[in-house]
Amino acid sequence: MSSKKKAVEELRFGEAIEQLEGILSQVEAEEVDIDELADQLKVAAGLLELCRGKIRRAEVEVTQIVQALEEAEAEAEQEEGS
Image 1 (cartoon, rainbow, N blue to C red):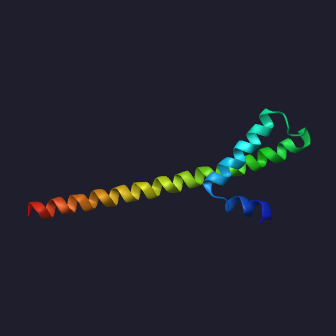
Image 2 (cartoon, rainbow, N blue to C red):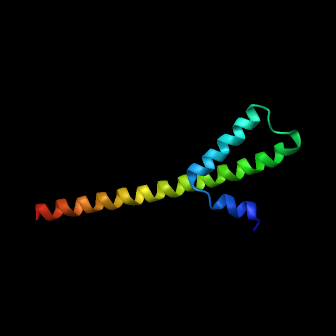
């Protein structure tokens, strides 16, 4: 695994978004040399993939927490009704 890929995988969500915004700003301002553009876009694609994965994992965790709370609430209601 390359050191760049490993470094990207270790980023927190906010850090990845910050880097994406920086790349976007540079591209929009035409500050990126054409020779570096492809490399910057590859980095941006990796950052997007990382962010999407973190969002998917967070969605799963939130869903699991909500389900657990709903189950606990249903059990409490059943116990009260007994």
